[in-house]
Length: 475
Ligand SMILES: Cc1cc2nc3c(=O)[nH]c(=O)nc-3n(C[C@H](O)[C@H](O)[C@H](O)COP(=O)(O)OP(=O)(O)OC[C@H]3O[C@@H](n4cnc5c(N)ncnc54)[C@H](O)[C@@H]3O)c2cc1C
Ligand SMILES: NC(=O)c1ccc[n+]([C@@H]2O[C@H](COP(=O)([O-])OP(=O)(O)OC[C@H]3O[C@@H](n4cnc5c(N)ncnc54)[C@H](O)[C@@H]3O)[C@@H](O)[C@H]2O)c1
Image 1 (cartoon, rainbow, N blue to C red):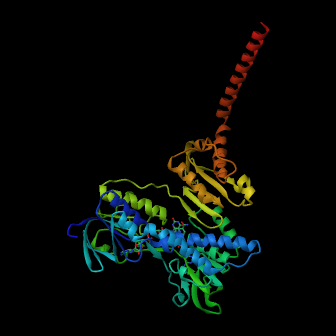
Image 2: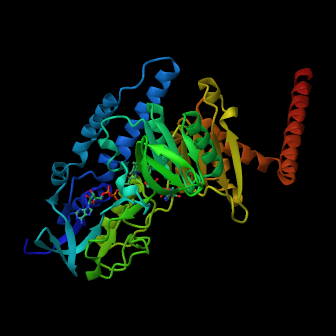
Image 3: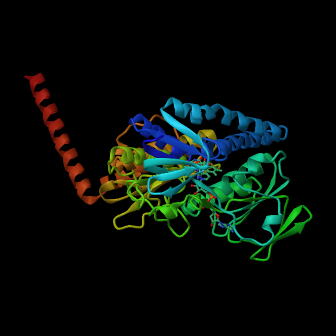
């Protein structure tokens, strides 16, 4: 290529794929470089395998409760491979090429302004999108290197169900995978240093913790591994609080490290934060006006839907020279049982804010399904505006769309309460939380006086009408 390409996309995960397809659709000459396999974490080691595993584990738990046989781990692995195989064509190099993107296989690094090298081959570009994602962060714990450890990248390679699994971490990966392996039959211990799901509503985290414990997971939520040595089951983990825990396999789920170290960013003025994540403005542009970034490599929350949405904005801004901003309404779901779904604000800690909570105990669909553990909590601002909330329950994630729409569209509780909802649904809990808040407004002395006056006027009119018709009949 003699001419510089319009957009160089580095990384072929969700952010890279969506960014490259967006740019090509807009008519830009687009090249995507992928070092390993297109599809990224979401397809190969993240969302797709983990959600399939959780589904298989939930099924195993149901079968076990009804006295059925133990789950077959090789079958579970086959199911995961089948799910990946089904979705993979959408993310393949062929699909990208069909969309007008040139795909190069290799590891890319910047060598200077407007220049990058892909395994020795030089490429010139006008604009670039960094979409290199993140890798599991592995803490420095003496002896960890000698133990049998897995991360979210490698747990999928286990051919046998570990008898004893020790999970380090308390975030979504630790909770989802910890619960799944417990339900499949592993003896799971979870060691989290600062509680489970620390970014979520505390009542939601407590319900998840209780549910994990019911599934047999031993949870230590304020402790961490200090030293690892050989033990009877494989490894012996000594904790800061002095506990000694046996493990056959250790799952390290203690956060992420951005893939920026060998990108050659020192040749460009791209600012990073102290942990190496790319800093972007609200148009996804970096401190270098020719370079954009999206996905897990940035400081934004690490979710597939955000990687895709933000990469699309980044690519169209880069190609068309726009300054469109990304939406700050960020929905998220932790797919434990119960699910925890949240969007926008989850705490009413600002002036004029309040909450409205409805539990699944009071929600008829949950009663009929015998799944009454959970709640909906709305965070409400001035004049009843819905600012965010948390939904916990068996299908919490499916109700999140409506709450996200309410937050993004700046709806009030009165507007949501005014929408008729089919009965009985889990969504009734969300609706009832809105109704409960809207009703509080109706209970205020001013509104009571007003409605009382309107009712008196209507009564007076009816009486008059009745009197007139009686007079007409007797005339
Ligand atoms: C176990 C697990 C479960 C998850 N579940 C969910 C979920 O249910 N819902 C959700 O929204 N999110 C989930 N996530 C998060 C989600 O997977 C990520 O947010 C998303 O995959 C990030 O996409 P990305 O494109 O930014 O990065 P990645 O998917 O990591 O893609 C980056 C790509 O860049 C390539 N690359 C890196 N450096 C170079 C280079 N120098 N040259 C060329 N190529 C390079 C890599 O090989 C990789 O393919 C989960 C994550 C994990 C680990
Ligand atoms: N359902 C989903 O959308 C989903 C599922 C899985 C992962 N993800 C994404 O992947 C990202 C990474 O997930 P994660 O769970 O690894 O990271 P995380 O950063 O969310 O959580 C890591 C947890 O580990 C704890 N921790 C850190 N060091 C520790 C140590 N040495 N010992 C014990 N605990 C320690 C932290 O206190 C924290 O609670 C998340 O940010 C999330 O956005 C999303």
